[in-house]
Image (cartoon, rainbow, N blue to C red; front, side, top):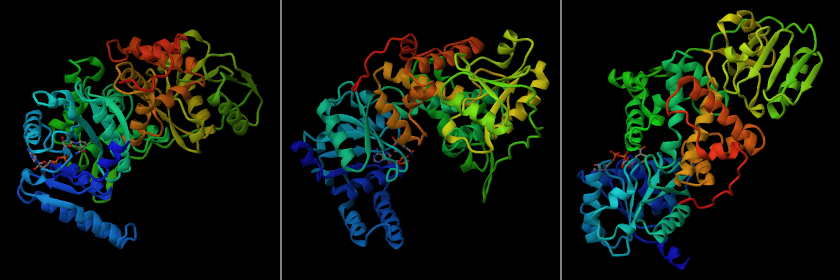
Length: 523
Ligand code: NAI
């Protein structure tokens, strides 16, 4: 601990005064470190310092920062024109161009200039920390310190361990990041680390649904926002830029030796090839004007009052089934009979069956009950339901009457039904099952532990819950939750074939009743 304390005022060298480097310099200076800021481009570090001064003055003017704190922060930063001026630095954080050779060359140079116990950290978002350290005299002092953009606001820091990173070095950076007001999470140096790996299905499943004409971008976005995500995947890809998002997907795909799990999408490639890069280009999935995106509204839904000719039976147990039973009573005033032993959640009213997706398509369910009109709706979070929330709904072409019933029923229950192609897991269940599965694989591969994955996804990309929180909420207890997720993935696998939807051993084991103890430190 003493050793950690001695780091809290250690001089820090930040190399690269671009978007990330400027932010890293700011948080280090705000935490009390003297900071040297260097950039290869002449004048870039001085300009970044001036820019920071202006930003902090703005915060002072708004009363969000004291004049003294702003002055001290800026005063701690020295823009330097040559690396030699930073010879006393005990921590170097590089945020230069994302290129392996450039980073290796820089770190070799730093090895000569800085004290032998200085830590060399890299903010790389996609290059192996092990590879960056290769060839150095002391690769054990190289560690990833992966910040998120914008650095002053985003809490997450992935502390990335290369194969040769010394544990003490990683722990020092972990504690230091905490002192900088961040939430650090340990990660193993593997493609995409935690966030960029686990987040891939959020984009990939939306792109797959688009490719097969399952739903429109604004429909997918509306349904995932209704499920609690701050932004839908299409709007988010537009914001990130399709070129950047596509490059990360390609890099994770290639780095995993072309594992089909991570295969990029031709839908996105077309956008990139056409220069429709998203918000920055004025057009991506949506068209952007001075007032923001032109997002088409969801289609209006015509419904008729639901006719309750006899008792409604609500199937299944758990949060959603309970919510459904109450909502049916509220909507119809009629009687509800419960069938809690049913493995699916849904309702049966006469010859009409409305089922919450368990991965099976409506046509598969209706083949078991040919006498019924069957429709499938997506998973929903009962805690988030408020009137008019969009919810995907699918039915088979053979049951058009069922569709009308489904639309009216869903509207009566308070949702805005969004019709989409009849496919496994619709939008929400499919996306969340895949995110949980990728997180489970990351843990299986020792990239991070469950807690790390949850923190990283909530703090790095603002997910409304962590993937393991979703796992635990899916069906109440861990065994049936994992069984439920595995079923959605198995249905996707049976439908599409290929490696993409293979179930993680972490999920499979627990679905079978094996409950290995949680590992607190999976590195
Ligand atoms: P940027 O292009 O805004 O800034 C990079 C800066 O480094 C430029 O000012 C450039 O002149 C300077 N530079 C390039 N080579 C140099 C060298 N050899 N020595 C000194 N300075 C050099 O890039 P950005 O976005 O700040 O990214 C920097 C690093 O951070 C990259 O490794 C990137 O992958 C990573 N990163 C970026 C994130 C983002 O959202 N932009 C998020 C997390 C990590």
